Image 1 (cartoon, rainbow, N blue to C red):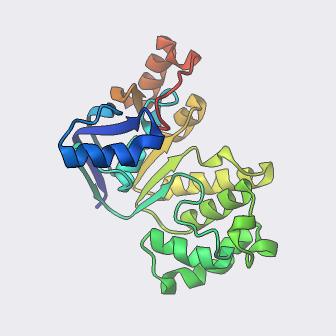
Image 2 (cartoon, one colour):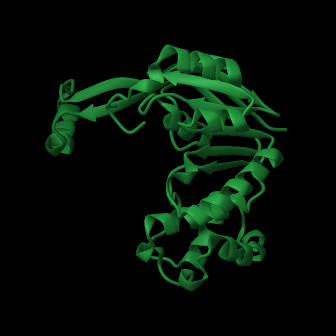
Length: 256
């Protein structure tokens, strides 16, 4: 059984006008029961109601800052909603920020085991996968070096290979091919399409509407923290393109 249920979710972020005064002012206001005027609160997501079931290959798209990545982090349990609920049933593999769960002081080999634990896999389950991960990533020459010496592309390759060697029921992919060399991206794309076929639910965040149409059967258009449209991928993409929203990018208040 695999299912994601998001009900009446609102997520609030806080920004501080003067970050240098953040802790001191917060402490004084806390002790004196004074309202903190230095804090700006705003909703990153509001009124989100979505349900994903077996067979859904859902593309999540919208402008930078719309709330796509934030929504994926809510589903992955990295953020918790200010209001509402997020329920996930099934083994979840999130391909989000490059190197999430890595320790830069440990070697690539050691991080394979540790990152496996991030995905809920024991050392016993990860050890038989190590050789395949090293081979596919193309990092054999560097695998016993601390990853703090790896380039961004190398870390991306290792993170992708670890995640895609774990059999997911629910797969979350957020612009995973943003870094990496052309040859690796070719192999990774083939691997990703295979995972799309094998996973019960896929959530795919991308700015490429062509790729969304190719890989997905459902579209979720997010704009300014709300779900603007949810339905058949072809219909949602057409509405998004017809709106003209994709023609411009706006600056966001925070990385969302």
